[in-house]
Image 1 (cartoon, rainbow, N blue to C red):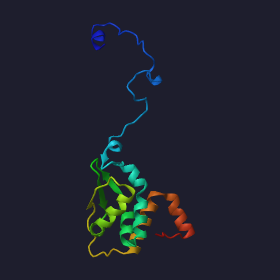
Image 2: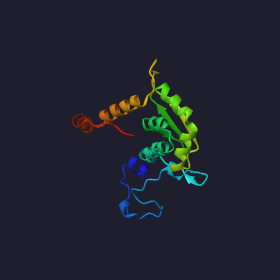
Image 3: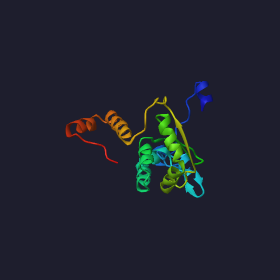
Length: 171
């Protein structure tokens, strides 16, 4: 067809059905998206994509709270996952070194809580992205304050409601 245009000829007219009518026998309809991560299997369970994990990340924190690991749950709630690999490795990126150390100390409990919702996850990698805060202690109040600040920044309507109704964040 490209050769015909080079020689100045017009290509022959299309005789087949329009592509949106699904006239081909490829087995994939127009508009179908196949995700490689959704089809990967680890021990019979499909590795979820990052969006699925982020949507249900609150369940992991709830499981940790139910297991009486409130500090770890608070750290998990403030540290959403950033990468999931096809082999079942989940990467978390903590804001500071203290949070990364707290997550690292509770890695086994965290992995257990994650695997309850996502059985295909095999490993958790934790690293910190920010500069360590010198001398700053990690407290539940501090974590709540950071979380509220992030929520305020993300949603101005929620920030206004927090101010006007004097709302407080509960676990």
